[in-house]
Length: 404
Image (cartoon, rainbow, N blue to C red; front, side):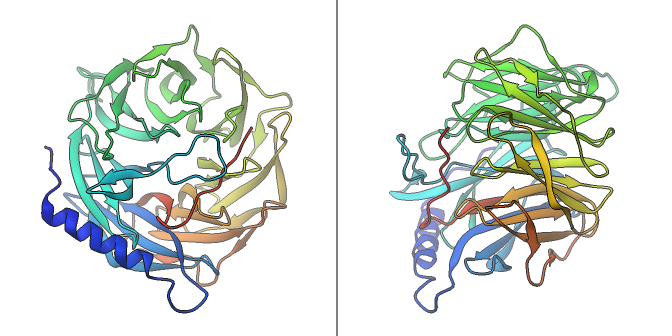
């Protein structure tokens, strides 16, 4: 089902933008961005919880309208690229009714849908469209740095299911000038068994998907039209690969192995092949799931589900090897799943905790990578089964820029 932007919603968005731009009129503290947490607890639909990020402390407080409806079992959320400064290629937010806004894309596993929301400068969400995936049980998503394509990994390609196992699929959606996505994918390509994670290099040239059922990473070249072409061979990826992330320079790719408690590190080759890092793989705490590389490309963080903590690593800028910092971990709530770093300054880290439904916040030391718990963390959602978290800079603040 598809919803068109109405004049009433457009007007509300303009009001939201105006309110957001005026929030720093009093005092030195202001909102530098927003955090969105997904909850799968409610049935038949899940929810999205919205928080403001305080510029001084990093503390989270609910936005005025704190909760929004999602689809059934929301499991992944990605945001459109924001305004970048200091780069040779300036990326601007999408335009809706003459106003610059960013987009949040939420993937719903239970009803095979993607909802895209326009983000007001005060953090308010405005649902724009709901579209169906081509396959079933979508689990992960990624957006290229240029904001041209949304990539979604489906557990099953059409014709297959849990009762009739078969390959997964990648759905590619071209993102329109207003941030919308079409009702049907621009392109699709078959993936291996049980995909669980997906990432795209910053230059948009290659897409990688974790194929847990075959214990591999599928690599694809992207031609700029949305079409993906599989590379000749898949890359071995441990025993139970789960999440995947690329560094902001596009030189390194990292995968968590949630059974062996490892980070698998790879160096990206010119043709898109991945070569395991020397001295890898690298030890984590128990059951690593989500991971993220900080906007500067200096540090990597893992959400360790069974250990109830987040692991911190410094990235060697020559080899890509991650080395645990001291202290190497910080406590979270119960069952951490996803890790997000606010992009406005790259100073604050947020982790979703599935079991107790909280968001853990920490301050990132940009010299050492050490995380220091934020005051009053963790932050509650009022529910449980918090599946993932995403962070976005507010419209008036630039995101971190990293050059190779």
